[in-house]
Length: 244
Image 1 (tube, rainbow, N blue to C red):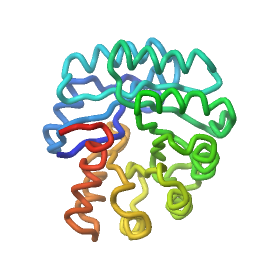
Image 2: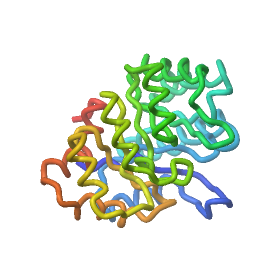
Image 3: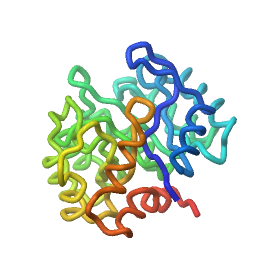
């Protein structure tokens, strides 16, 4: 089973992106992906509730292929964000939470703990667009949260420092790394597997923002065992979500 744990749906002029459920499933069929774990762009950047409702409608078109993240643009929404996690789990059955961070609004602050605890209540993995240092702080606050560091440090806010991402993940048993990144440094995935084991690494493409063919090749072409590839490409996320 291949599960892409980092997928976006919606329309964005800034990202030059327009993708609906039908488009994503056609792309998944082309790539051989069984399931897609999806966030909605409107929920991340504009209107949290409207975007999450739109995601639920899209998932209803392909409920056997799409899994929903309840997306939260910032923990500074306070109780509204916590209530949204409860609402999307209870009404729609969303299985994860996505939270965004950027330099002007870091999520490394005390108010984020309540949001992480809400995800823990429903056994949700938390995909966070964040930095290694922010993850270090958050795991110290809520160590039982299953936090997935998007891009493994491979984005501008984290200065592309995937070595530090691996170092921090080594400190925290429940801090996982996501493979989606425009970086293709030699030895990046091999180093992470050697230091952490394949069980702490989850496959993601960031499609359609990034080319999923390239993201898949980063794993299939890595100098790691076939069993490690199986776990990264879907086995780990299937285990976290209780999928057969």
